[in-house]
Length: 274
Image (tube, rainbow, N blue to C red; front, side):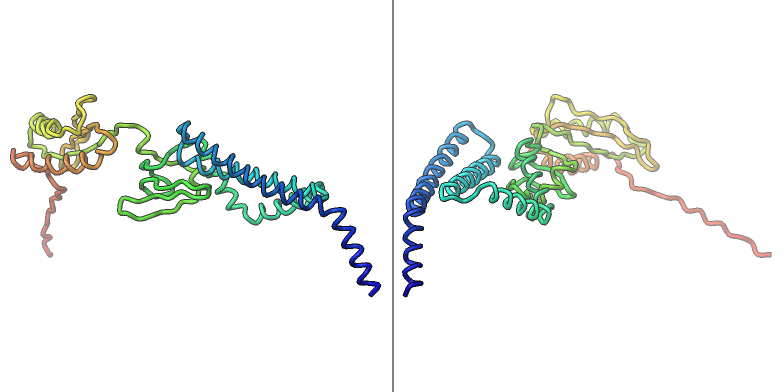
């Protein structure tokens, strides 16, 4: 009975001493989370009005929200008498241990930050990186999703993506399409050049400025190769590529210009037996 009275007395003293602080801390926590929600919502509107990149907005909003919540929790713990110096030291040691264990993940996180800040590419850009070629579907803080030309989803960690070379085919509005059309050594070069030029002029997607470039690029073993370069808008690249290959072949066939294939002469010698 005496122990029960002592427990009751100590509980009463604890409630008197810390009850007000605990209630105030709980109230501060509730109001704080409500205020943080309002702040995050306000920043979402600000980012939308300022036309900040849509791939960067979720990252910035997430960092803002988590930072404010951590600061709020630390403040509330200080209100109830938790020694923050020791807590921060323990938190730092735990952070170091977690950081060493998740070094690869942290590298991807840092790579994601670099990609979102420097923006070497954005959503819907057509890029080539890490051995893959495709359209950027989503940029997350740890990885980036590409949709390949054959409709596959490739997830690339941001660590390697941010530290290696990549090609952004959508960075410029126009692209050059290169071809090499082979004709026979007995064919008329000027005739073939004019036929290729006529094919290019019939396609509205091919730019007239810069003008199409057609010149002898190589005197190969079995053909004279005409280097052909035309310009088009980036999204029209493959339409122009397939159009030129097909129509030049048809035009050559109709006008008697040959497209030779590799040939080899084989000479047979008969040896006389003694």
